[in-house]
Image (spheres, rainbow, N blue to C red):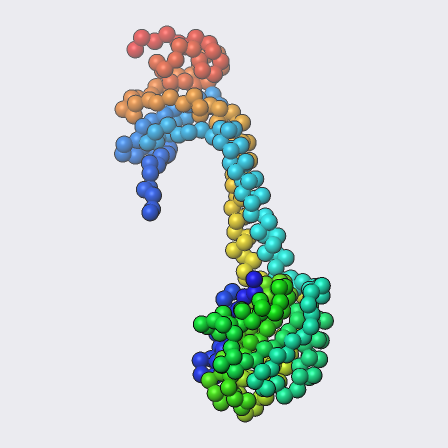
Length: 324
């Protein structure tokens, strides 16, 4: 469907185109030192007991949690990458649109405001060869304007009544006098395919320029207003649309999150395979008020907590008998 590229009027200036919160939840504070309300946990690793304080037992990293994160990241990337690819391709001006549609240049000037049709036709033909977009003009007196309660709707109805493609630029102009001292209005209607080579910023540039030249009726004829605004459009197929590069950054945020999730998942899987993580899964709670007496094993020199085991947790040797 065609869209408005903007428009303007004698007195109104130009206008652009139509283009519950959750709770904090429970958290687990983990620390090497005691804090109010903390529980103490102990696990054996590398021949010694290790302690930490927490609201509740810290969940050790597991292979399954890492794999879930990796799968989520892959799905996230698969969903976001097409958006990124489309955004990247969108900053490059495409080649001219193919001319496999009704390419006749239409200058339907009921008002008689166009003073040289052949001049505009030649300019529009050159523009068509460069972009593949067919430029046309339709002017109407107010009493013969197309149906619609706004000029944008009138321009839309004018466009779709004449063409079924999306490759035209139409200037729809409604006025009463040739010297443009009346309350004239105009609208630019653009086929959606045109944005592949003429971006919305180009539409806005043309709209602003053309309306400014129309208002300056003593310096620009209607033809001169059209041609001058048209000549201000600089389209080079294959070039980068520098004014749209900034629009690429929001699209890059999504895959960036996916990469972060993927790296985090891989790290979680790797960490879950380390001996210390395996030891953490065996952590036991020890009352914070209990005095932990560390005993050295005679067989392996490993250290364990007195009265917490019947055999050395490091080598399996019987612990020292001590009734105290």
